[in-house]
Image 1 (tube, helix red, strand yellow):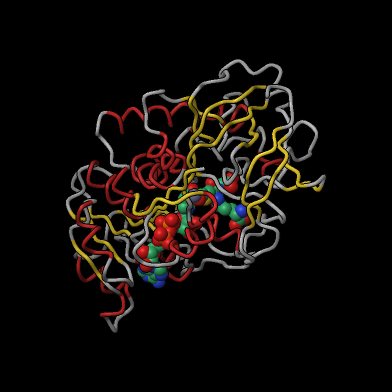
Image 2: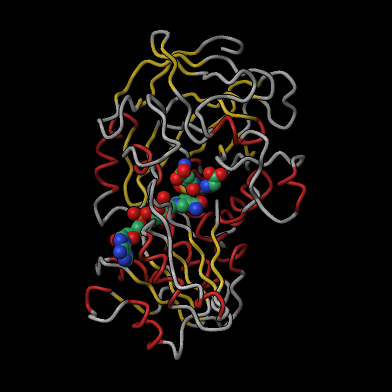
Length: 375
Ligand code: NAD
Ligand code: AHE
Ligand code: ZN
């Protein structure tokens, strides 16, 4: 198949909010600096649902969504040296070129090399898509497009992993689990003894709790409007549970009262701007740090009284938990193989690519953390 167009099945989002359609998609061969991957497993993340909903200002249609996956390299374009056909890989929506201003700064995991292309659904080389259906181009998504049996990505967006790692599990390290852990370890840098609040106990929030437990937090307070989340959350390290619906006071006040003045670290893992405000304002005066992880819809803005920052609270955000993708995803896979981090526990459902619309329905039900699709 090397150098040839591959026709395979992919789930195409033709329009926002309309059911995805399994199509025969033509996938062009990888050009210079590109890698064609046979995707074996992909999970669904809330961000896929967000873009599908039409609320993502970068959302373009028709497109192939999906960004939490694992697969095997099928072929590589000219000049690609770090991976070869047969390598097991995780596609990374957050690239790492190791050469750009961002990568060299030592201050961020963001990479500038291909971001202008991935934000508009094309490849960097010729600003075109490698996907088409009957000659009609289909946009890429996040530089990954994993809801397809084959995808083409930039070489700077491919993490090569241990061939012994189970791809049906480690696909989760392509987004949600890594993001939650990294938000705690890299962005907040939670210290032993800290009091931590986690808003939203989906996969990302639970991974925050797991990361906080590993970092030695003394109290991990989980906040969710769905009380059913608490039983599961205990297994990920949450020590106390607060449902805002059980209180008349604003939730930030409830937390300040519970913690003698506020928490040391808080994490917003929902994508709701009023919760982001509460997460900042429940932080302790003088040092409390709040990290925004959730993705909020187009047009939404955050606000608080500047006095909150004047008096020492710090507001931060994180993309992919601050992890350098190509370097650290293989390390996360190793940690999973050594049973130092959980992954299996986040998988509540397993379906196949053709059942993807049911999988999206599940994502909106409380009982689903991650649904892994066999592609
Ligand atoms: P999810 O839908 O599984 O989890 C969200 C949780 O929040 C649910 O348990 C829900 O009951 C709870 N919730 C909803 N409204 C609430 C409220 N008002 N107060 C308290 N709890 C509330 O989603 P997920 O897959 O875990 O993703 C969480 C967020 O993180 C999404 O916005 C996603 O787009 C974003 N995300 C960001 C990054 C990043 O790199 N920054 C990476 C992955 C996901
Ligand atoms: N296009 C969206 C941005 C969405 C966003 O913030 N994405 C996160 C990853 S979410 C994964 O589930 C991210 O990494 N952002 C950094 C980047 O460069 O995109 C919008 O709202 O505009
Ligand atoms: Zn995601």
